[in-house]
Image (tube, rainbow, N blue to C red; front, side, top):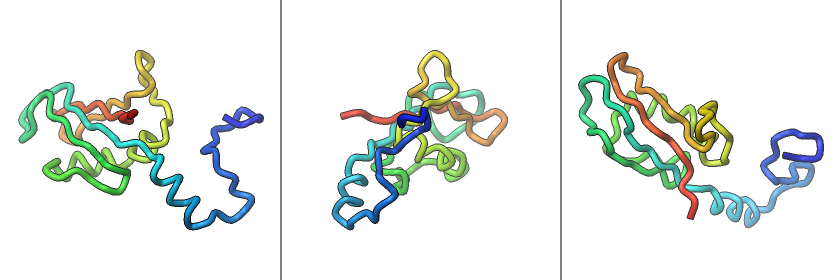
Length: 112
């Protein structure tokens, strides 16, 4: 948060960012963990399966494309630490796959 209570990425956008500064910021992005926490119906994935994004653009291999379509809406929020609506743990985004009897996934930043 900045002094006005607004969400801030900690980047001064009033001045141009150098190539090196951009890469330094990019290197600080956290990995993203995708873990199945509920299986409500038929799915090629198994309860407890875990996959990792190295960054918001590097999709993990082997994940159903329909699920990735939904998860992609949240990867940048998760990588930057934006809180979820999940009151018990706002660090975790709980995402349902698009199939009405599909799966539920916990999506979170991996802090080193």
